[in-house]
Image 1 (cartoon, rainbow, N blue to C red):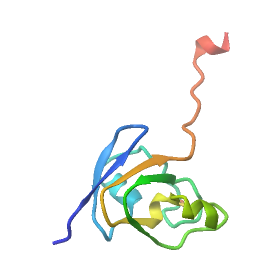
Image 2 (tube, rainbow, N blue to C red):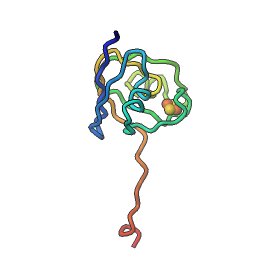
Image 3 (spheres, protein in one colour):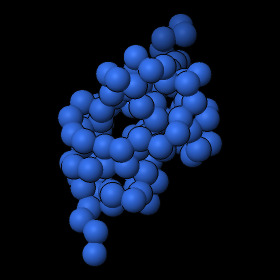
Image 4 (cartoon, helix red, strand yellow):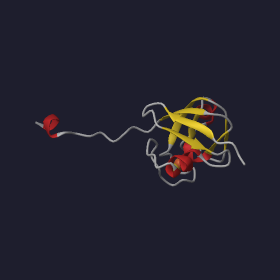
Length: 106
Ligand code: FES
């Protein structure tokens, strides 16, 4: 049986487990989480971009339109295309939708 790794999203404090052959995004969805936005699930839309702050991972193919070589080298990756090799700390890169309240409008 494969060992699951613990993934923590820094901004929300959400933590979930991820198997080595499971993408971080799939594991988050499987756990019922929504701390990272979900789009195509195939490395093409860039919605699930995260920064890996700590830990080891393996990358699958991802669009260079959304992640440049230099960003990749700095740990900026697509959560649907990374597979953990240790516990990871990540932080979402796409901004949360801005919520405008009635008070702010007046
Ligand atoms: S969900 Fe589209 S690139 Fe990850």
